[in-house]
Length: 125
Image (cartoon, rainbow, N blue to C red; front, side, top):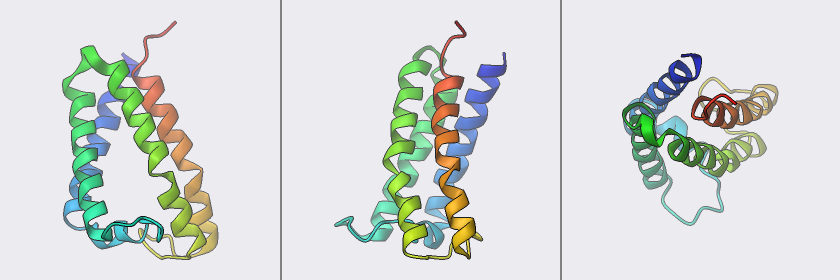
């Protein structure tokens, strides 16, 4: 039961984050797009928001495919990690992360999300 709750909670969190990419936090998310990404920052934020909504919805609505979806979610969290590093290295304020200490501390949350995605979508062994 605990893993199922964790999976649904992560899915809901992803849907919320995705909607925030498209609406009220759009500008904050642009602060995380690394300079080396050769695409428009806003387009990257919109695309990642759509991806988060899709992943979150899949985590909730496709329990029979949970292992595959959890793996994709973990890979997604890994793929966007450079954005968190970029925000820290480039000293970009967003989401209340307004000093180096806070931006650096944020980096350690990404492995938690990766672990959460994998743990909540695996069968207990």
